[in-house]
Length: 208
Image 1: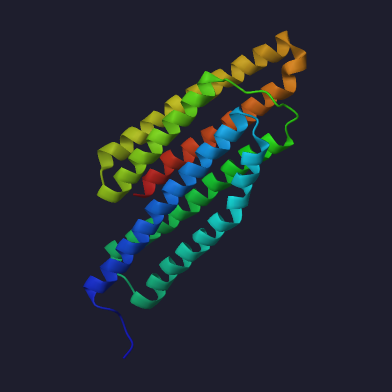
Image 2: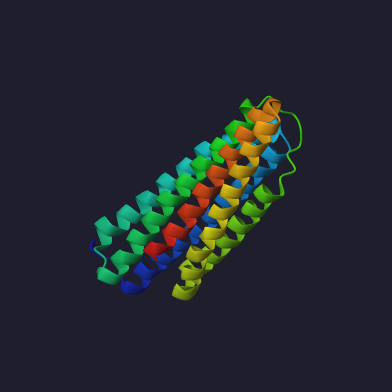
């Protein structure tokens, strides 16, 4: 016998996909942190490990997308369920973009000629705030907490302010010490990629 599965079994399928998305979100956050540690410590070995994660992340993205499409095609969900599935698809696509930014940061580390530790407090603070935003965004997604989602969205302004502050600091440092220009450029690029992650996290909540 074909046809749609019972409602309870259908909801369990959606629940399973939601859990997969949460697991993937935590995985992406962990790899982003690893990429930042590699950059701040000029650790090329660690950066290579991050880049190796790219294909496995892409595979997980494709698998989750296929599960979502299968539910839409085979189960013909009602409007509310369809909205949930479409939200999940959007979140998956945004996680893929965060993964791309993570790889770009690792590539900066690999291509850099610098072997020094970059003790940049503002960059560290950006990462800490993004981690906190990510965790709260997952809670908001899982619980449907619109107030928390709005709070995360507003906190993204802090990420942008920190990015601008880093930009100005690096521009001034480049003018004072031209020999540090390349390192300053790498810091600015990394800050911009982190800012992009913040945007993805904040804008992603508009779908929830």
